[in-house]
Length: 343
Image 1 (cartoon, rainbow, N blue to C red):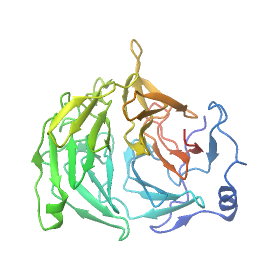
Image 2 (spheres, rainbow, N blue to C red; image 1 turned 60 degrees about the vertical axis):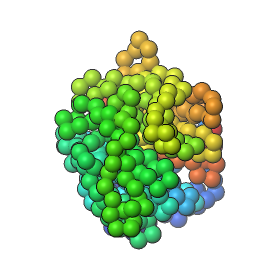
Image 3 (cartoon, one colour; image 1 turned 90 degrees about the vertical axis):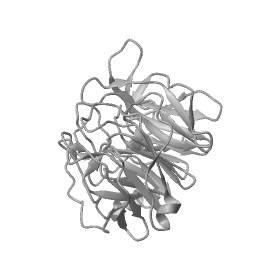
């Protein structure tokens, strides 16, 4: 595996990063590019990201993949954010994050992106209570009410007009919090709102994947502690906002964490791409599995990544699964990007 290279085309905000050659190849279907090894011939290698990213926040809108913050080389949190358009292979730099942040989930509310908490300014930085919204059309951030306390690696989900934040580590970056807070976005739009308390997580943890599925919040996997043991968990907890209660969901095939930016809902399934994993009786390692959960079903391995990756960005657009960035292990970060038919 080749190491990541510092990008030289990370130009000013709003600039597109493409060339006629790259565009022609991508529009032709990218099938003529070399295929990545070790993935049963299913993956196609794309040109690198403009800057390597690990632990970014991600959303998909208008058939484009948005990347916010995350770590770059040297385990340094970044403000840089970009959007990838698979229709022509172009990259456009959008407004930088207000702070250099990693370990935050992103949720999409119409054409507004929300994110809360995280780790700021590098691996040895601090947990934060910042809450922001990003207006995609205006390319502008706005501050929202701070979390009641600082948190990093927590879950964020939107149900109706209620924004839910739960779990994550406390100020010491190692103590897992059960706290679950809710912000009424309707009240915020009308002129003001405060975070309120909801039923706490039954088993607190951090760096779990979090999505809204069938009107309920799924908190999937995660780990106990962050700066010490990092014990991966297989449990899935489901929160029902109608009853303000938690129930057990189908457990993951193995302990799993570090897949927040690669976990999303598409069609009638939840997808989880890469991450860290600890199988029963084994030590922690970087994962190459693509997992999927259907309504009423159990988790299945539906594909394998070209290489094991921690915290990549991923999304399905136009029937294609795109995976970018992530860490192959040992705190390295890479800029590789791949595509394949969605499994």
